[in-house]
Image (cartoon, rainbow, N blue to C red; front, side):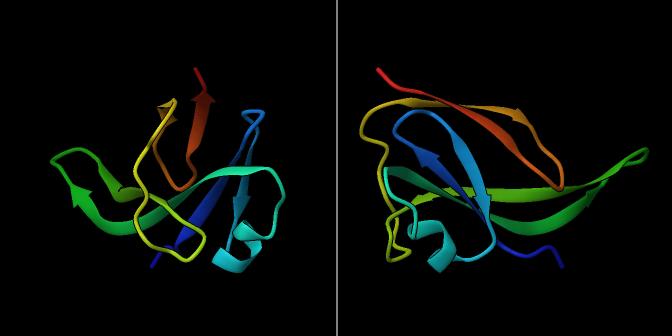
Length: 87
């Protein structure tokens, strides 16, 4: 099983990967927390790959709405790379 991962997205657009919620919310200038949960593996005739659930959360772990900004997913795999753009 793949553990839950947290991506800290800062006001300047930098992204940091954290393994626990406490580690993730300990950073100053934190704009968003992106929680990435493993859901299952998908098996096609040729390939098998994991499926993840992406969720913006508050410091306490509750759901958060995206108020300002856009996120673009660059790749999906065991690791995720995202870019953050703010208006």
